[in-house]
Image (cartoon, rainbow, N blue to C red; front, side, top):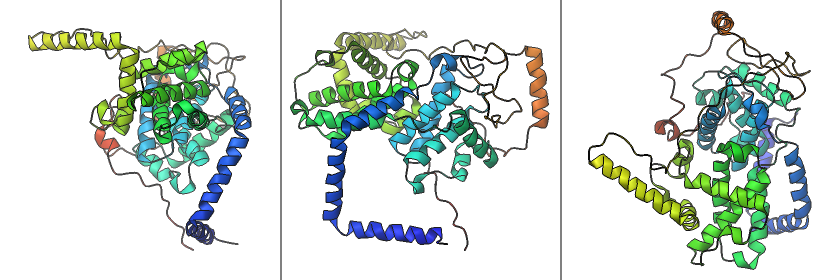
Length: 433
């Protein structure tokens, strides 16, 4: 039997042979591009069909008794930080968000298990989209959560996610798959010639990442619609920066639904209420103008909404004047919207019913998840006295966990030292032959 090291040596030899013949690499690239162009329409139809089968239900997500939209934003912030530290692809991040939302729309998730589900979703997505050497190991995943969960818990949760999603966890097409197709069609048009393809994709990916944090854009609109709107805004913004006259996207967008998505994307970007991991990934500790692509989007946003921009600057100046005058009250200048309010945790109604073939969710408590189904509900929330008793018994029978080396990090504020630290190693220990 051939060992893994021998197979790795063969792959490296093949890569070295191809790298020594640049003409062969160019010929393979041209053949790949011609094939994609020939079957581009069929590929797009297939992705759209798969997209409709892998959408999450916001109504089912709202039925979660312990997690809500605000916690979803915090866990997405944590996942994006881990994704950047592990240097994974953009497809992995989009696929991880989709897996996480679909799982939470089917299975009741405890707040103590939400982080474990998020890391396992990132693990599954990386196995499907990234190269094998880039897939994080269990040791790396444990270090990201400060060893809060054990190795068997990660393995059991991975199996439970696959079973809960009918073994089609990675069937959803990511946003950047649609971006690649749309950018190719945009570049073929004469009005977009002269623009850098990589800049358009970079700006579109940035807007799609922001859209994933917004519940309206994430649940009510398809990934294809969001990607098309992001590419449209990116091309108009880069054209304006390149010296072309200002052109409003509504002049070329005929579909009212697509125009609505463009409005929501610009509104999300206009608020400047970026997640902390997003800000540290693209800006570090600098301002928006430090990133040329974000600066282009910001300039285009000011041209689209000049009245709101001027009004916001005037209110901001009035606020600063009041601070200099010794006033202790902050005026509501409305540039950054307040944190979305936490909705009431709706208890799941009906009788207890679990999906056949799905094992209990591995978690740090003894409570088992309840399947969210449109046809069969789950048990309603228990009384406070009963839940207190259950928590006491759960603490007594809780398995031994790894102790943290330091205090628990505040999940509402991303620590720069946690983000800017040394990259987490994804390498595994080689087995001794």
